[in-house]
Image (tube, rainbow, N blue to C red; front, side):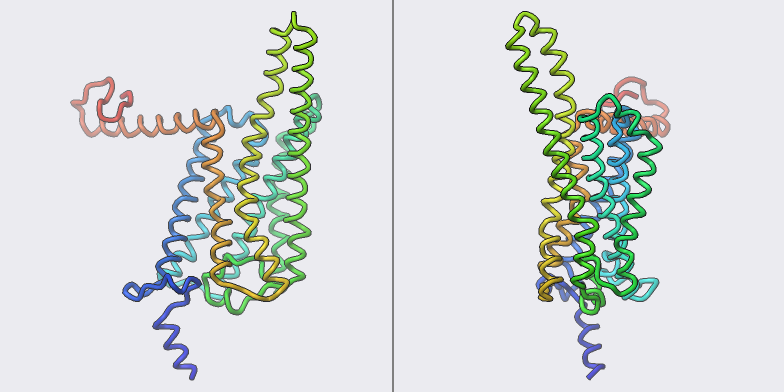
Length: 352
């Protein structure tokens, strides 16, 4: 009987999406395509974000750049971690047994996404302090305190999910591409409640409270400026311009960060809802768990897209990075061809 089961498992690999299995190549084709595609997008997108921050010094003038770079590094590690299930689905031999591999993978991805969630909460607190206490902001938010905060984020995220190694419960469905995690590692309602109380709920409440007050304060400032312009029409030119310069940049930058936060929670909400329902009822669905899990992980790439589309300074840094790469390629072309005339290369439009 056992030999028959082993034979069936060896002839038909374990797939969460059973309709994605392709017998001609003997692996879960749909799962491999989804995971490999997301892995490539996440790694390439976050590498670009990290390099752009190094190429655009103006981005580092905002203290939130510390947290955004932390998210970029965490998301990059998520992409690198996703290489593990990709190689497993393609039947590459794993260095350790499957049960340990899927537990470590699930733990690592959970910690990394927790770092992103906590970083978004800290960004909202930072912007709240900047708007409510502008005069004392520089004394309250210092580079040393920011580094300490980032260290505490990583430490706290690790400690929240550490009990999963002591058989308390399952931190998520990230490792369910491995058969042992999908069938033998079960969620625990108490551990799920612990994660919600210690991570999901506080982060969501902080974000809602801070951004609600940020936009309320910005709206009040805008209203006060318009009233002053109406009251002192003779001085509206100078006073209106000063007020507009002071109020609009904070609101625009807060909107960029709010978009990133909103997309994060929109993509993670189906996963969190399914996680809570499955933990409380015990009913599981492999297709739903796979879909919600990798929809949530796709957020690691969405941050790059939103920031590149919303932040003009980031766009200039991206152009600077592409220009540097273009110049490097052109210099290599000159080195290979000594007869190239210095000037502008008509093929790529770069100065050489």
